[in-house]
Amino acid sequence: MAGMKSSELLADAFGRIDSTVREVLDGLDGTALNWRPDPAANSIAWLLWHLARIQDEQVAHVAGVDSRWRAGGFHERFGFDLDPHGTGYGHSAEQAAVVRVETAGLLLDYLGAVQTQSLDYVAGLDGADFDRIVDRRWTPAVTLGVRLVSVIDDCVQHAGQAAYVKGLFARAADR
Image (tube, rainbow, N blue to C red; front, side, top):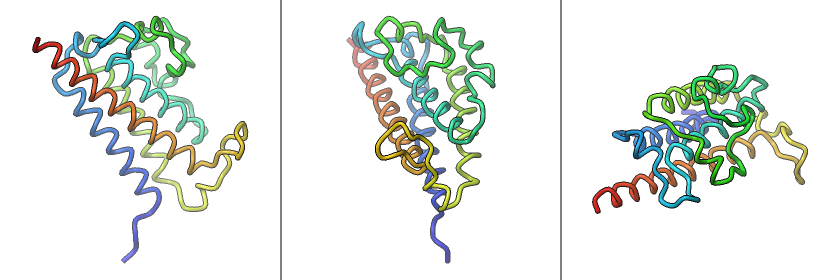
């Protein structure tokens, strides 16, 4: 019996992120999605948009394809007055406030497109692919394996933060 392939492990990790995000979004309206526990804090909408933007740009880059954000028309569909190449990294509180959605549907559409692209990409990888250098701006240079683990780690953290903000919103709403 053969063991789990690296590509299957990555697909499982991306799938867990998707499940957590869907659980967070379940039952939320625009008020909950855009609520910020503090004027300098991030909303659920921003956290999940940023999660998707990071995954989208990083996976598109290593796969050598266009991001779903631009090529899939999501930049226009969301209509944010933000740099279409930006991912939210380094956003000020004012920039984060621009990321507002009225329903979870558009976020789910974008997240689904990013998830599909990510799963399609990792499905074609084998063990030798993970040693390929994808970023020489760092010392040591970043391999594909390290980049994908970094993306997963970042997404898991933001999904957890969004779940936490959902809990804070529920407590604030109960008061």
